Image (tube, rainbow, N blue to C red; front, side, top):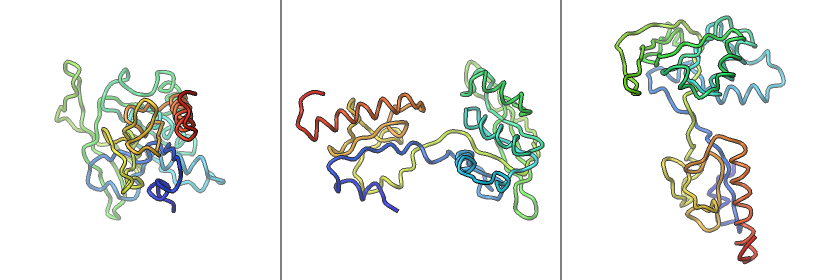
Length: 235
């Protein structure tokens, strides 16, 4: 497997557009137990699967999150045959990252969306598999999320984590690239702290999870790379 560090210094110019390949964790014990899955990985496998019948799908599924990834994995697992699919989000409908249209789309597919719930404990059966998740009810006080100390348990044989993504920093080891807020620091030309490396997309500091923005980053970087390699003063 080629690492980014192997490329840096071997070529006159390198562009990094690796996205955010690491998923935020719940921070709960039992997170590595069978049945607790990363929604991004599951969706990636689904998109590449030749036979959807071979994909694992639970009967009672709980999806933690409120964005497009949460909606996507919830709808897809319902279509794959899950009996009950519930999206649990710690804030209200207005604060969800998914649009109102997407929320409605999920509900028309039989997905239940429950608000003001945050994960507190994963429940495991005697075999060590996921069998439920304890959720704490939350509330908004002056715009701030507050814990209530009131708990409810949702039965589940599969729990998906869809609470945001972050940059996988392992491939950046020994590249000398500076980070800002956990992402690659770039200037206005998308050049990194190394003169021979550029980056774009949501892997850069301030990057947005939008295809059109990533394309624009690539365009800006390409023009900068052209100027750097040709010695041109302008595009």
